[in-house]
Amino acid sequence: NYVFEKKGDMHAIMITLNSFWTTLITQKLPYKPDDFTPIASLANDPFFLWVNEDSPWKNAGDFIKAAQEKEIVASGTGSKQEDEVLFLRIQEVAKTKPFKYVPQTGGGGVATALAGHQGGVEVTVNNPSEGRALFQASPRKLRPLCTFQAASPKDGPFKDLATCKSQGLAIDDYYIVRSVMGPPGLSAAQQKFWIDVFKGVYDSKEWQDFAATNALDLKFVAGDDFKKLVGEFTKLHTDIAQKNGWLK
Image 1: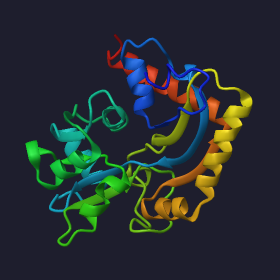
Image 2: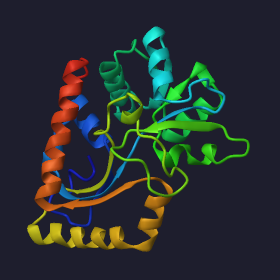
Image 3: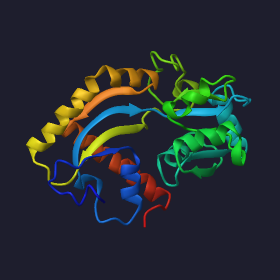
C-alpha cells in the first residue's frame, strides 16, 4: 500500500517474493500486480522438500507413497501463500491425499516446527536458506529429499541434491521470484536507473556468493522480459486461487 501510494516517486521501491502475487490476488485490494512498475528479478529461489533427520523417508518416492496412503502434516509460511500453493500442486500432480496444512509466521518458524516435530509436522517446502542452518547443525536436524528445480545445485552445501522430478515428483517450474518492484507511474528513465542499480547488485561477488551458498538459480530478468514474467505468475496464482476458492 505504501509503495502504491508513491506514484511516480522513484525513491520508493519494494523487494518482493511470491506473496506479492498471492496477497494481491486473494485479498480485496484496490490494485493489481501489473499496476506496479517492474524493475528486475535477481534470482529464482527454489523450494526443497524437507523432512526431519529422523524421518523414514529417504527420497521423494517414499514421501509420495506415504502421502498417497495417509494424511501428512505439512507446514509452511502463512495461509494461501506460496508454500500452501506448492503443497496443493504436489497433491494434484502426485495424487496424494489432502495435506493437513499448518501455517507458521515465517520460514524460520516452519523449519523449527519440522525440526521439533511441533504440531506433528512431517514435511515442509522451505527454501534452502531457511533450512540450511538446521541441515548443517551438529547433530543434523533437517534433511532435504529433493529440489523442485530443473537441475541439481552445482555447488554449495546442497551440491548434487536430486531433483524431485528425477524421483517421480514432476514439479520443476515453481519457485520464489526474488525481485524488485517500483510504484506505479515511473518513467522509462527512472525504471532504467533502478534496473542498472540492481544489475550492479546482481553482478557483485556478495550476491554471487550468497546465491551459491543458498542454491539460488541466478537469472537477471528486467524490462519487457520481467513484465512478461509478472503476467505469467499473475495468471498462475489466479488460476490456483480460483481452483481452491481463495478469491473474495
